[in-house]
Image (cartoon, rainbow, N blue to C red):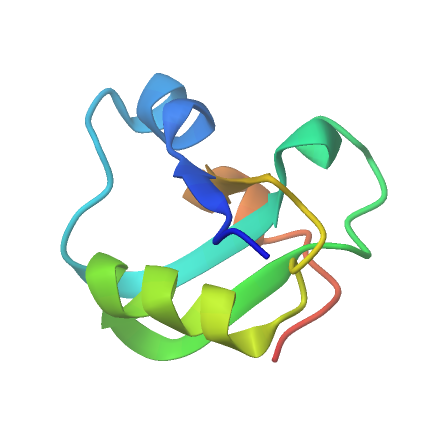
Length: 84
C-alpha cells in the first residue's frame, strides 16, 4: 500500500506559512478537514518536530486507507477529541 501524502494547505492558509518547527501537530483525512466531528483527527503529542510528526502519524497506521492526510491549524486543535 502506498504511503499517504501529507497536505499542508489548511495549515498554510491559517498561519500564512508552511508548517515547521516543534509543537503539537493535528492530522486528519484531507476529505474530512472541514467536518465538525473531529473523531477521525489525531494529535501527535507530546511535542515533536513537524518532520517527526509526519513520520509518527504515518507509522500509527490510523490513516492507512487514506490517500491524503491534512495538517490542521492550531485553532482547530483545541476542539480535537482523539489524542494518541
